[in-house]
Length: 245
Image 1 (cartoon, one colour):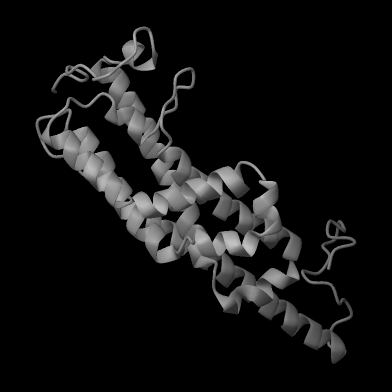
Image 2 (image 1 turned 90 degrees about the vertical axis):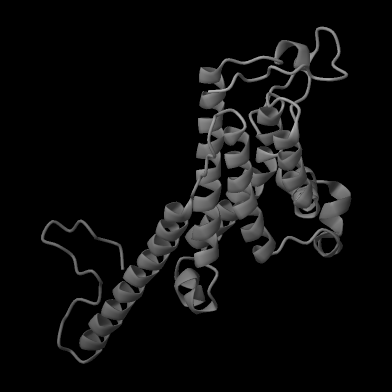
């Protein structure tokens, strides 16, 4: 494994953040890589769960339990929006944050580092919009923005397709950072998380659909007088479901 942080950081201030954090052993660096990778996994999970639940045909299910689904869907969206913004937060003096820019500080100057910086720069438009969202409506509630939220969304749009492209870029950037510290190319994949997240969301909805279909059949039998208990699922002998329908 190649040494980390071997090249001096230009224009650093004596006793400042970059002076203290200029060098890092490989074990600690790998620990930080693992933390960032875990954060990316959570972002993929939240985004693809959220995306899979954005089907108009599911609205009937959501409306049956609107308070549950309202906060669930908004929480998933908040998770990936804030997660991506934090992933690219710049470390500041007195506030050490684990992020892509933080990891980049310990990559020696050279061609590999320039490629990583270029890849991040390519995502600058969507990242700037995400940061605006983070600072104005997600982490804080800016008064001016709150009073003109529609104009804000028009000026700083965030589209699903752009986020998916950004997620691909994020995994590539992490691989490039890791590759710069080893003697081989490192590739990360979050395909399984993406697929399983979508599958889980669809499975939950299908199970709910089945439940409501069976409940409908149950109520039809009750209306016809075939059964005398309108509750579904029916009460058990201990009355555990008493009061629920």
